[in-house]
Length: 200
Ligand code: IMP
Figure 1 (cartoon, rainbow, N blue to C red):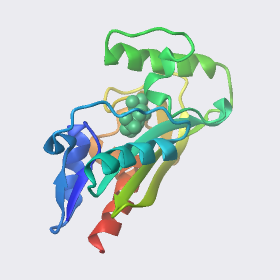
Figure 2: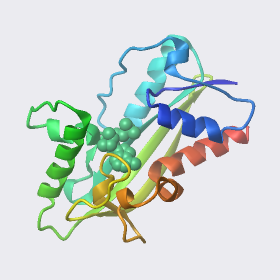
Figure 3: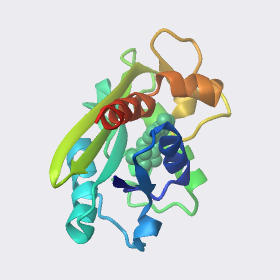
């Protein structure tokens, strides 16, 4: 079965193609000849993942799946959530020159909003929307933890330097990729998707 992963992230593509058993021909957006922008303008991770998958399904009539991830901070009423990638640009109307600067600013904004607060609970949540023959099935992966007071660690990406998963004393950025991938929100969601697909 042909299955399109609606992503431009080659790392994610590689990860999932290694996990799928035979019987699936995993294709990228590039393979479809699609290099447009898919709008991500919905208020929830669920709607965003669905919208991305249906956007491609409606144009190409292919079985496909899309994912969306956000950091949900309890004290901030589950913000930044869908806005995680662009948190620092949101209300302040600033544009950052590079992804690195934006990530830095996102983290600084989060740390300053939580400065001096005892309530630091947060969770990463990944939602995957799979469209098979026009029908949607969703999968979710979640990891709960706390936001640190300062950045720690050099690994990972995004908010990894300020997130300590429950049961650990290291941030995601202080873990090896292998260690993070055993417990991460994305790994859990993808494992559910892969289990579903491999058991068909
Ligand atoms: P995406 O939906 O996978 O593109 O994730 C959206 C945003 O959430 C990213 O740009 C990051 O800011 C944040 N994010 C997602 N996954 C992680 C993670 O594993 N660690 C840290 N930040 C993440």
